[in-house]
Image (tube, rainbow, N blue to C red; front, side, top):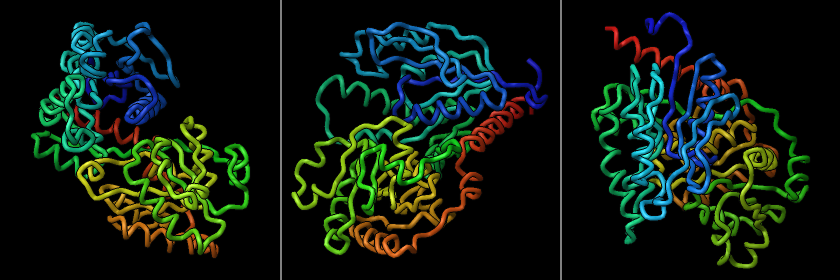
Length: 391
């Protein structure tokens, strides 16, 4: 292979633990699409959690995927940590590449990444798992085994990589403390798309045309009760106020008082296309985040998805969203606690109701949070790491 700065397309291999559209999939897939559009040759090596499926090659949005079906032992070891899948993926020799990039600290992908014939290795850290996503007591072997695997890998992968990509400053600091040689911050973004107007978006989703809608979307719903509290606090002052919810488990609505429940429109699980309509249908987007290690570590994709519509977003000032919110006038800060959230919600609804909501700047948004720009930043990080191997 020739030198890293000759302008030629790079051969990039992504190693992921899952192949279905959920969570980190939207990060690595969109970065793979962006790199491909820049002319680089990207292949994603991933696993299908359905052990009854077949291993296969696929092309998704122009990106080549090799998907290996997990074994039936996932019922014993859990997804991403099945020992037979780890061995099968490690044994499969992929072609030589310039960059091998691992996403998430699971052995299913990590073993293949470590064996990759690559000039540089990148590790992407986009969530805190031990003490973050993985917290609280568990007792079943199927739950304990993944925790042990992640607890071993998560603090070691940063120093095993030539460079670490992260979603924000909290994990950048953690990566350096864990021995990372170099760190690049790559946010979660969105693709520029034409959004439906509010009237059509509400018609498609079956929402009330004349209501004042605040909306929560996402599966990570620990703070959804904050939104219910805020709705209860403000429903008498604003008879048209309603709360739209998608993605969160429906059981979270079961114990709501009838007077609050009747103001909630629950839309269940939506496709990515429908979530864009959902965001466009709102008068106020909602992103509540408690001040804890998990939320300090993450960069919610819905932060970008809401802001891209130009609809005002009420967001907690926790972690990277707290650092970025001041850049965007239509991101309304809501503090870090439940009480601050409820108070800020009431103030934001008052502004929206009287037509005083902050205006969006799409050019400013695109500069910081478009997948186009983020993919270029990632490609620059690859070339920088490759150049360092020649120093």
